[in-house]
Image 1 (cartoon, helix red, strand yellow):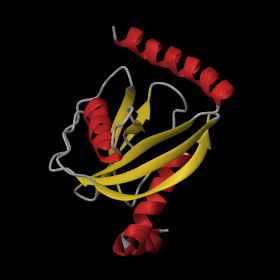
Image 2 (cartoon, one colour):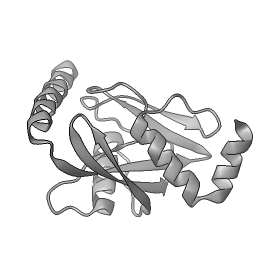
Image 3 (cartoon, helix red, strand yellow):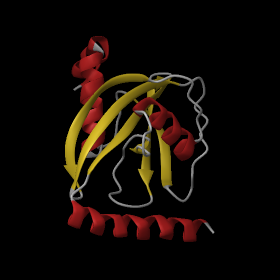
Image 4 (cartoon, one colour):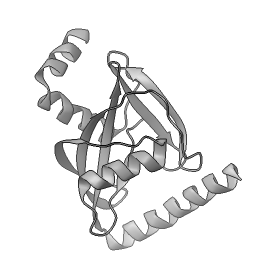
Length: 160
């Protein structure tokens, strides 16, 4: 059943890419950095590019960015967030879409996750000083977080 679910996500993503190629839509989405004990949660999706990124996705019609971040985190990794901190946003172009991506930060009390196995291939907590190569949008989200938190930026610059 999981294999069928993953196949459906890959098929839907392929269809969406065709639509995006034709329509060149402007979409709004979210990325949420989840922090627990100086580690950040990274995921790899079952569809699209296989790089490491943060939980997130596109907003629903008339959905606010903060509620969208909470919904996406709940759907993808099973973590219920009471509050999220908006760090900023960036614009990008990916797969023929014009994206506006809101970046959020949330601390979580537990490292426990429950994955949506159809959408999420893998999730891991990584120490902030030992991150794997990140997707382009995840890199941009990290830059926004670093700019918003000078102490975090100093810590990472000393580790390079």
